[in-house]
Amino acid sequence: MPSFSHSKIGTFEACKLQYKFAYIDKIKVEAEDTIETYLGSRAHEALEKLYRDKRFEKLMTLDELLVYYNKIWEENWKDSIIIVKKDYTADNYRKMGERMLTDYYDRHKPFDKGRIIGLETQDFLPLDEQGRYKFHIRIDRLMDMGEGLYEVHDYKTGSSLSNQKELDKDRQLAMYSQWVRQNFKDFKKVRLVWHFLAFDKEMDSYRTKEELENLREKTLSQIAEIESTENFPANVSWLCDWCLYKPICPKWKHEVELEEKPENEYLNDPGLKLVDAYVKLKEKIDAYRKEAEEELDKIREALIAFCEKEGVQVVAGSENKISVKTYETIKLPGKNTKERAELIETLKKLGRLEDVSSFNTYALAKILDKKEWDKGELEQLERFWTAEKNYRLTVSKK
Ligand code: SF4
Image (cartoon, rainbow, N blue to C red; front, side):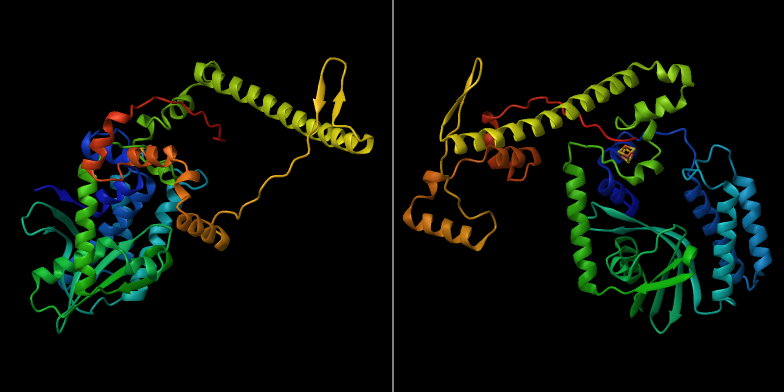
């Protein structure tokens, strides 16, 4: 039974190429964690220990919690861990983790609300009746609050704070909510709780049965899309800085290789030379074209003024002459205006719309490319088109 998780579907949504590298080609990368995931793992482990001890009626003091956190930080540390934000050191991140745990501890001590029934709970939630697909469940902390109320707790160590609207639509914890409903028949309500540790903020949300059913259907249709996808284009975004496949991604491979070269080799790189030459020449052409067009506009205005002043329609040069014609054009209502809609309706009524509307090959090519119509319809059109390789060069700042 293929299994999907929140992060697997999220990867497909964020970048299809990254999804292919990770889940289809299953490429193992040498690179280590980023500092953000490293901090997240250590903070999760420290909180797991806090609650595990609590289950055994042993309450860690804040000092003990911080000593444990620093111990696992040291034990697991590798110098190859990636720090993207160069203004901050590993120690800045370690201290940030200490502050998160201190705030959390002070806010929730003595941790005696409800009964802990799961820590880092792992299971699978079947998504369809035939049992073809399942969703990976991993709950940071599951609590039984009594009288049928369950709480699913999730710790977030990232530096962005979600808003309520985003949490009310969150897929991950909603799926966990469904899992609780299926596994604890005495449930009456499931409270989904996010702890945004960097902000010392606790936020929550609930899901109705209908919302969960809609989510299940939506997730199944996303899975169907994933399974039928044949093209996996790269999607460059701010997330690329945290992507472990950057050194093999065609959007970044060359830049990563250049960064690793010493300066003398770097400047001799053939790709770098080509880009520099291309940009230099293009900038020169663009500047010349702009200047020439402005000059041409001025001469054009002067020629029109000359014709009007002298009462002539053709002006002679040394080897050429220019004819200046005055003519009127018909101006029709612009796109998306009420008048335009009325005009189209009138043409339809007159049976004349076909005479003046042209076949939009651009729109059809887009539909064929994105496979937006039914398979049968697309098959009937297949003999009319061929795939042509084109190149578009776009210059941007690094
Ligand atoms: S580096 Fe960016 S574009 Fe390339 S695979 Fe990773 S996320 Fe996608």
